[in-house]
Image 1: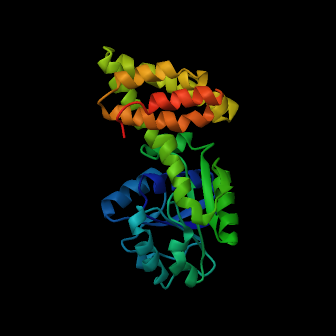
Image 2: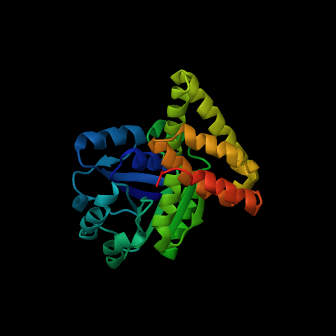
Image 3: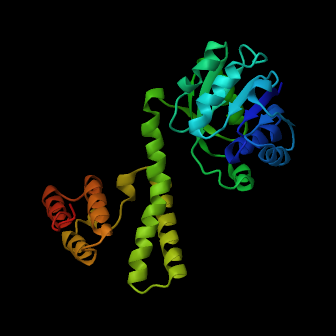
Length: 289
């Protein structure tokens, strides 16, 4: 039987998850509580079900309450929920923060609820696209055993690939997402700067960078190994090439970034110790700090 679900903070992520669960007939949407009536009405229109609730303390009883507010408001929302006289004992209270643990929901646990957190490792900037492309999203799960069982079943039904994570390592887990996603964008900007200074027109430069990154990501998906996916001068042990790059980047912030990334990449190189030492010397040859 579908569960009755309330949503607190139905922004991009909250309304996307609610829509997916509703479409797969895993939940009925009860009430939605946002910071404004206008944003709530927008969420209701996108989800296609539910009722507007102006206050967390007035939320009706439900089997599942999803708190999808920004991280800094999760505990506050949970406190208000725990003081709701209609909060159903044994129901599941869930948040979707990537860096905060289910312990943030302790007021709901003390009120008799089961608590968990699940974090989909993807962007929800465009809910219409997120709903269409959600299947195959990896979702990290931790919390009470009973809550995890229910949440895993719900998310499996909408195409997620769920896996357990150690609760006290969530910040490390979240940092991985920043490395793999956010900093990939940062690296694209650094590459773009180099190509623009080399005389390549911006749109062409971005197409070159995107094509190259897509190829690398494809290699990673195929090999499941950073070592086997590495190409370029460090993979080949070319210290002289690295020296030329460092000279070309001299005096820029990119010089420091390039050197630090190169030093971190040396461990992936199949080159012998002598060549690795030459490459290290090339990367440390300037005053990049």
